[in-house]
Length: 370
Image (cartoon, rainbow, N blue to C red; front, side, top):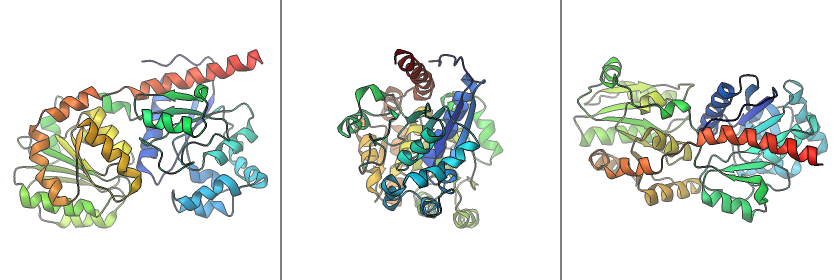
């Protein structure tokens, strides 16, 4: 699906939360997709903290990360605060603001509307469901929603979002490179990073911050398997990177510190993936058709994701590192996982690019009618 060509050059801001892997990955994917199709537009990535740094009180709160305390910004940033935050837009006057960050959108959009009353605001939840009211859906501020699941769309309706402002998309946006076929020179690429092409390849990633669980999972795999390869992403966890590069493992491993780009090319080399039950982890696995094992999370935010993975049979949820290691042979040898991945494969990144132009055209028609 190709997006219709935008006739006018526009400034498009894609706002994301740097501390959240799903938010950042979605933002980067959208920027590349939109800029490729609309080269006359300026598509800029903007960290959510860039706005709140203009506010003396909420700037430090936002920098602590996405938490319920941060939702105070919904209600407590008054008009003077909005004016301070809106000063950011002097650097880049927006025609369209797309947010893949939760919680802060009411303040974000109010600041954008102050800078440009004609701005179009579009929210793309990068979750499979909303956990906690007003995390994503805030009807008090005009915005369009692109919802990746039926549950999200239902929750939006229940929150009071009118049907005209809700669009159902088939999934979350991921890098277009994820849609590329598996490399024909896979054996050569595996040898180039020190792996054995004759043995299965596992890909382990727990997002941008990394996780000490990766070390425990790697040790569990080492106890239960001999003929295996691992590609391990440590995120920004320097301690984990040091531990893994100094740990004796009985099979080949390629260990990487933080990579600014989504490591889809490594995921495409893998026979299976291991990670946390995040919505973007699941989506990248889905689009690259890599069967996934996730470690059961204590975070309520991930419960729905785990349920979706189990219901669709696109992966496995396991509670412990030892349990994960024990399921590797199953996920490699059982073809039903890949069959289900093929069934649930989607083209969301292309749908979103088209919908953003449709929304722009809809707004123009509404203005003419008025």
